[in-house]
Image 1 (cartoon, rainbow, N blue to C red):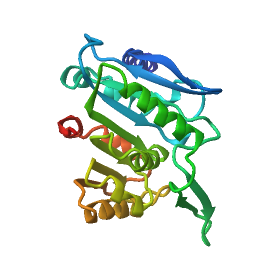
Image 2: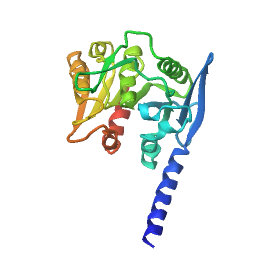
Image 3: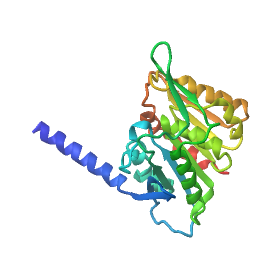
Image 4: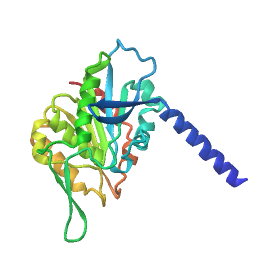
Length: 259
């Protein structure tokens, strides 16, 4: 009896979650011989002649692929909740990075203790996935219904690194950004610090991407005159997004930011 109840609970929770994620339509952006899969959710009562805010969310390395589904694992249900859709109607886009690529241009290595190191290189040619992403952003923002004053981007881990790099490569487009447990090259913040509002999140004991990266980026943005909020979750490892999507002030803050 107990196992039956547990099964039913899992079924109904899964069914509810699927119902939310089914709001995202399947799309592919093609340029030349390259294709970037993405999912897009339109607000209820969508009108092509009415401007809506646009949110891009960049997934982490674990959700890479070409199934056009995995990228919704974290954050998909957050933006498609009844509350978000009713109180903050927006077009939400989840692109998917290919398996062997990366959103940001990063060189990896190992230190003397065998821990992975990151060298951010946005000064180099962007990755193919970043090129396709930038082209997709331009394409979407060229549409009649895209509110040019309310373009937002966020991401987690690899996606947060991609968020920082995207701001550097397109500093004049975005009104706000929310990178989660990521990092970037601090020198690049001068390009967008005064143009984009940022709320940065990280877990205090992140064993995958050191919290120092977010702290350094926040310090650099502040020094360059930026509007910056930094939230560090005590005793949280590399899953800060679980706490970010419980932040009651995230959506009010995000949608209050305008160009």
